[in-house]
Image (cartoon, rainbow, N blue to C red; front, side, top):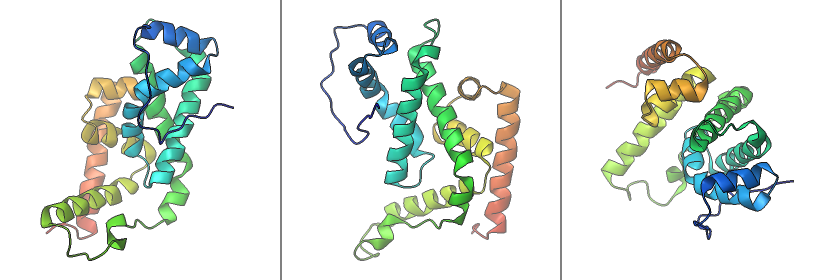
Length: 199
C-alpha cells in the first residue's frame, strides 16, 4: 500500500524530466514518480486541506487520504486539462467529502486554542491575540455551516479563488456557487449576531 510522508518538508527533486513524463510514469504504477508529483503539489494540497482540518493530526490524516485519492484516481486524469487543475479538483472534492463524513463528530467537539495551554496568556502581543481570536471566530462560524457552504466560503473567501475556479473545482455551476456563497455569508452574519459576537 502506498504511503506518503505528509510531514516531510524537503525532498530532492529531479527537474530535468518534464511533468508529463512524471505523470505518465505514475499512471503506469511507478510509485517514485507519484512521490515526485506529490512532493511538487504537497504545499498546495496541505494549504487547502488546512482550511478544513482542525488539528495537526487531523490535517495529516486528511492529507494522506487526499494523496491516496490522487494515487488511486490517476487513471482518470486526462491530459487535455492541466494536471494541477485535476490535483486541486480531487483535493477540494476530497476535503468536501471529509467535512460531510465527519460532521457529527466535529459538532460534538469543542475547539481549544493551542495557545491557551502555553505559559502566561499575557505573554503574547495584542495583535497576535486579536488575530487568533478572529480566526477562532471564523472557525466557529464555519463549523455551523453544512459541508457545501463551508467549501464554497473556504474557496472564495479564505483561499481567494474566483467564482469560475470554485465552480470548476467543485463541479457546481457558477450561479450555484454565487447563490450558495451569498446564503452561507448570510448564515454566518446571522449566527455572528445570534451568538452575541458583535461589539
